[in-house]
Amino acid sequence: MKAKVAINGYGTIGKRVADAVAAQDDMEIVGVVKTRPSFEARIAKEKGYDIYTPSDENHAEFKKSKIDVNGTLAELLEKTDIVIDATPGDTGEEYKKLYQEHGVKAIWQGGEDHELTGFSFNSEANYNDALGRDFTRVVSCNTTGLVRVLFPLDIAFGVKKARVTLMRRAADPNDIKTGPINSLIPDPIKLPSHHGPDVNSILPGIDITTMAVKTSTTLMHLHAINIELKKECSDLDVLGIFEKRPRIRLVSSKDRIKSTAEAMELAKDLGRPRGDMWENVVWKDSIAINKGELYFFQAIHQESDVVPENVDAIRAMLEMEKDGTKSIKKTNKAIGIK
Ligand code: NAD
Image 1 (cartoon, helix red, strand yellow):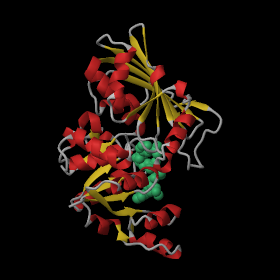
Image 2 (spheres, rainbow, N blue to C red):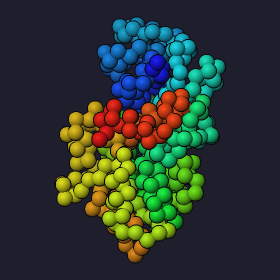
Image 3 (tube, rainbow, N blue to C red):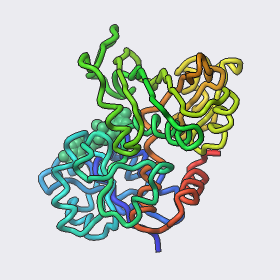
Image 4 (cartoon, helix red, strand yellow):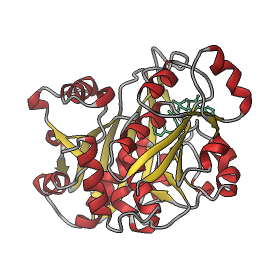
């Protein structure tokens, strides 16, 4: 029997997770929750997803737009094993009680605090700890990207300390309200930024400090990473570690990928849905050991890197697969990560 998955919050993350879940042979989408009628709601219908709303109050608007609604979130939860809450940050916590009342497991996103679930998830770092859990938070796009590189480096060489500067995209491409359109904003001004402590919600032993700058781009985040390792190693050793990780895509400037724009073009040329790049894009020719410390650049596609992690979190929480490596392989194969 397939796991029955609901999506509450069908926006940037929710609609991508819905498609990734639908692509798996061991889970299915039982419904998606929309607050308002929109082109996204129409396309969701065309894809065969049933539409639900947070309450009856939203139905009139959908009726006017001639989009059929199947019921309310509470009704949807009655036929759901697990809900992906991809509502905007700090909104999802309002729903916790409702999920509990319906005995439905829930996965929130990085916009919620770790304390909401008491457990934060990354497929490679702590799959086993998610087995059977009722509530989990898949960490943010930046934190997911950082954990994906820090975790294997820590296992191989030991991370003594990590110092990271994040150049953050200002807004997602569909967001017409958020700026800046011509500025660089230290964000937050008061350092360090929250990203380091967020990494520690999964990897508590890592000494990491982060600072972030909001930049006028919508495409991707760019991380400039400096790590002091406990064991001596070469750039080739580091490359060897990254080559083995299933969600790191190594690129090279020699291949004319010199920017986030070209990294996104690569995703489109690969035929990825919505031009998504689920993997960390690490420039292999940026990997350098200088005075005993490791340096490299990576780009993170904020709209999509957490998507496969949500799929694995479902498998772990419903104990459909006890082995994280097998789940990662299955998820990757179904969506097309080679
Ligand atoms: P979004 O604004 O694109 O989508 C949120 C969706 O939820 C929208 O469709 C909105 O209409 C709907 N919604 C709003 N209020 C609702 C409510 N009360 N009940 C049900 N639905 C409601 O947001 P997003 O970018 O997809 O972010 C969702 C979560 O994922 C946040 O926690 C965010 O921090 C996290 N996240 C976002 C990104 C990113 O870059 N976009 C990356 C990683 C994690």
